Image (cartoon, rainbow, N blue to C red; front, side):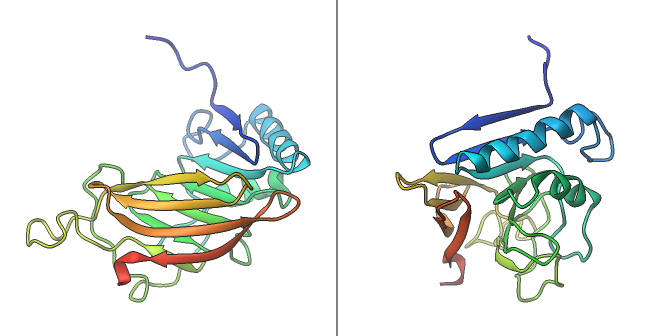
Length: 206
């Protein structure tokens, strides 16, 4: 078994750059404070935008939470380095699934996908939930065994599939653990590589 050799990496495609940072490797506070990591991350954001790629960030910790007001310090850590170059941010340290719109202090599309397998508590619908830092576009509020009365207190587990079209447009497909589509979000690509939301189809509402 090999040792982990780094706390961050980037993967480049023609139109999208995926940037991943382990937010607990250098700090137990879920921050990005290490000077070397900060310098690398800033350079990746700049390189992605210079190449007209969308920048997609992957972290364990979150910039904010569903059903909770306020913004976590990690948000400021990242935005001070992104300089407007962050398009989509995914995290999974908290256990639920939601997609958020851009907000005044959170100028990126955010998504928690921490619902992969942990038996988390079922979440309220976005209409019943208190406001969060960014507007909620989709929130998974179903039960794991939807359609039955078995453990209706446990939330629906699932995953998000990231699809890139030949022209650089992006689709996010939120699917449950059985492969059923729950939500589809579509993003168009601007000339500079950044992404704009086109539409969100919440299939759980139909």
